[in-house]
Length: 279
Image 1: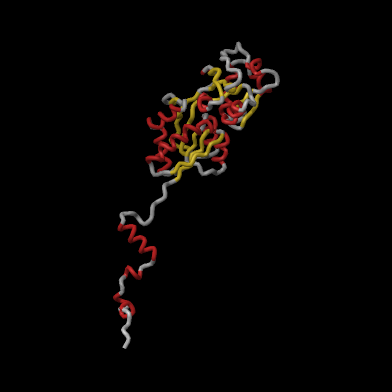
Image 2: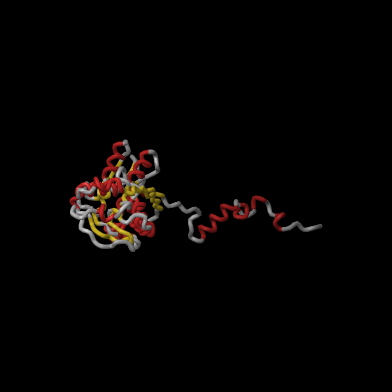
């Protein structure tokens, strides 16, 4: 009489539960034995819409934050006006970091809930030229005409004064210096301040007006002068949480951006902390 194989002769009720387990359960048991959880929780994502002039510094800050926090920060850079309009039309922003108060105010006027708002950073407005161009310093006191420095048929690169904060500040400064009327027809209007910087970097414009931090970030331009602080309103960068119910991850990142560690990173890129109480 033939002998049945051991496995076949073993009653079903006596077989090992582990051998009968589904593959996923086997994997879970093995992972647990190795001290690893069967499933890892994905890090929460936080979308921050920010002014183009913040891109280098904010990228560095995000890298530092993600290295020590379980969060994924997703920055979206554009002119402050463009970012504000995108948020007003439903973009999934949890934080808005503007280059001026006007567009932060406008966003609130559209019915968007903004909380924990404060002016975080301060910047300056400077005149630049291509690195290989005319690098003679100029005194911005209304007695040295920029139009003459431009040369015949050349244009001054600026963010579009109709909506780009850097261009709005530039218009105010040129008005204060008595040069707006002569220079308005000679503007090369860019969609954001970094686009204005690029026009000067490529030599397509012999002069440009950008933020000091933009000039500092480029090795293709030379800073000729800083516009007087009283020629335009203070260049402050307000930051706020967006929406009625910001996530805990967004709140944590907002709090960290105001910390000494984060402000030190922004300082390395040429920003200064906004004056206490500025708004």
